[in-house]
Image (cartoon, rainbow, N blue to C red; front, top):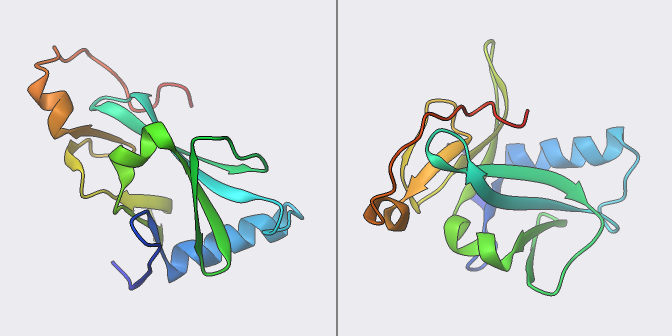
Length: 137
């Protein structure tokens, strides 16, 4: 993983991820002053939780906002505990290009990297269901 830019007690972006987000803003003619990168967690995927990302104009009362490399990163209060300390990277190679999240709170993840499990979910003894990481895509 490449060096990262730190947001205190939140999420971090690597230089490559910051550049990729900036490119998205430029391609969509969106201003980084008016929009943020939103990172969220929801039930789903083959490991129990899955990551989601969006370019968002709104913030909510329970959102935490971090400024990294001049970009706003927003995480809702419910998701923050699952992604605190995570590093968002952008990788590009012959087989895949896209954002990848290195999450210190994940005790396991599926091969696609979009879905993960935490220690608390594992302790609950939740029966695993056959799921697909491609649900909702």
